[in-house]
Length: 96
Image 1: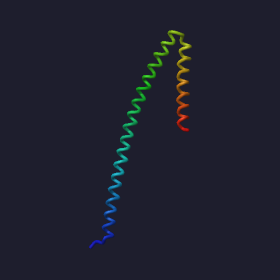
Image 2: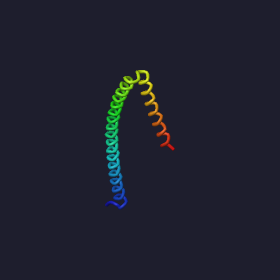
Image 3: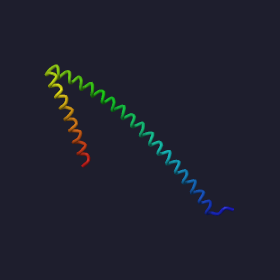
Image 4: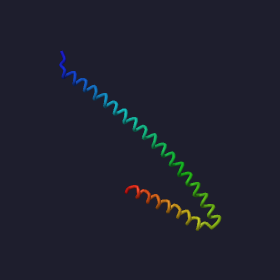
């Protein structure tokens, strides 16, 4: 004949196992979502980088045609320098 204490222990063990299984499934699903999200973000980043390359080349050729290659290189470099400085400024402002 079983006592109440043994039944309580069995029920608690079953509940703990069920919660552990549910937690493991939740963690696995969250990991899958994160991986899919990361893959999507990497694809978008590659597309942005490619478009930036083509836009930079088109702008360089246009400025080089109008002002010469030296000025075109200086202008393109300064544009990227300013973009980098603005991005750094925004990141520093967000931390405060």
